Image (cartoon, rainbow, N blue to C red):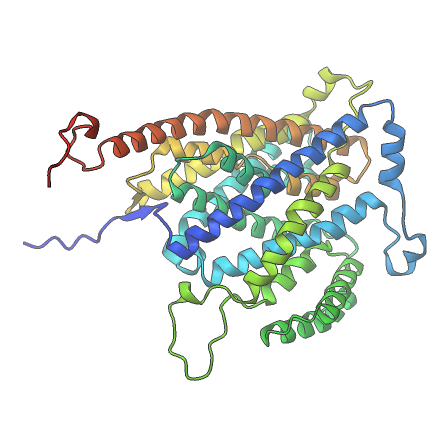
Amino acid sequence: MHDHTPPRRRLLTRSSWPEARHVADVLRTETVGGALLLVGAVLALVWANSPWVESYTRLSAWVPWPGGARWHLDLSIATWAADGLLAIFFFVVGLELKREFVAGDLRDPRRAALPVVAALGGMALPALIYVAVVLTAGGDGLRGWAIPTATDIAFALAVLAVISSHLPQGLRAFLLTLAVVDDLFAITIIAIFYTADFHPLPLLAALAPIGLFAWLVQRGRTWWWALIPLALATWALVHASGVHATVAGVLLGFTVPVLARRRAGAAPADTSEQVGGLAAHLEHLWRPVSAGIAVPVFALFAAGVTLRGTDLGALLTDPVVIAIVAGLVLGKGLGIFGSTYLLARFTRAQLDEDITWSDLLGIALLAGVGFTVSLLIGDLAFGSGSVADDRVKAAVLTGSVISAGLAAAVLVRRNAAYRRVALREQVDADGDGVPDVFQEPRRD
């Protein structure tokens, strides 16, 4: 009798070579970006708690263009960092999302199922934990329910790159894809739940510069003098509509072609061989700007929590603080790990043979680093400079540091185990189970 049972699918399997090379390039860039992000956050904390705190406050509140009120652009420098510079970050995210949908793991529904389910689990459980904690305490602060749902792709990948030397490649690819899907849902949450005073006419008007931008990039035109003004016009119109302006970056990123254009008469190539179109070019140009300038400057103005004169006991027992920390540390880890386990338990999917559940637990904990987008959502939920905003900043920083520490404890141990295996394989290169150093040299 023949067994007609379909083969079990492997979760977190190795990616193709182009995908592996892409993941490695992203990790290298995000390692530097994550370090600069950390520098910006530390500088903000030190400055905000120094004798020169007034200069920090004045700089954050400085409005460089007071005459921009007519266009809703009379923004403080801190708001410009959150609404303007982060649009560059989200443009790169849009390019990454487009790449994943066209040529990455998300193009295959079976491969996409795992990061999508994991991302949903890693967003739903933190939100539920937040709501449960806040409702138990009286319900004040429910508007911040989405704060612990986000994963900071720069920080998480930077931590992984520092820790990892021998961890399986599948873990790196999984974290990158998970963070990209997480960003997609976070963008959707911002656009739907944190849009105030919605004005449809400017949003409809934004379709014109978006359409012209798409028309140019689809034809391979990279004229900076045309694309940058169109991008600025799109940003200004989306901002005027009431939708958070960073969404403009994602929309523009989605218009850029991912696959290289084939010459007339050329034979069709494999999708993985076509990757490297204009999206890769623009991502190569703008990712350093995003990771090296936009996100660190945002961190400088977003992470300045003033703790001088603060009752730390009251801060640590504040329901919003507890809800955010619990959401990031417990909700993210349990949501991602649990949803992945359930997917494997109730389908024919299973982990790749090179990956253990301990490895996945480390990645799930690492996803609790929610710095950039969590701070952005907190600002949208409670308003910049408010008492609640300071609590959110303290909670996000605390939860992210705890998550990174727990993940590092797990992944450092796993990395050491994989390093020992790699050393044994190098010593026993011929695979006969006897260390080569004890064998007689071959005589030809």
